[in-house]
Image (cartoon, rainbow, N blue to C red; front, side, top):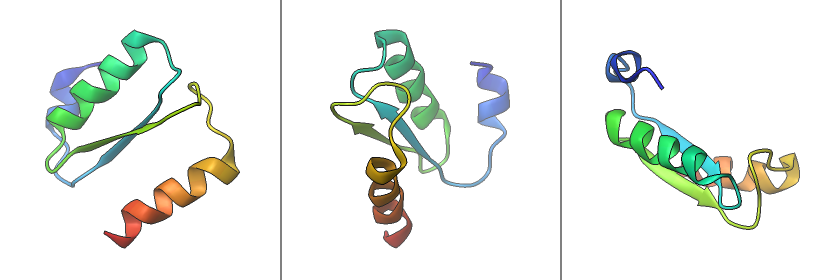
Length: 66
C-alpha cells in the first residue's frame, strides 16, 4: 500500500476487511485505517476478502448512519 497516497486523503474513511482474510490483508486494512483522517476499521467476521452483498450492505449502512 503506498502510504504517501493514503496520507493525501482528506476525508474520513472506513476500511472493511474480512476476518478470514489472510493476515497481511487485515494488517494492510489496519494500517490504512490509521492513515486516513478519522479512519475506522471494521472487521467482518466469518468472511474472507469477498463479503457477500447481503452481509456487506448492513455493515456499510451502519457506518453511513454514524
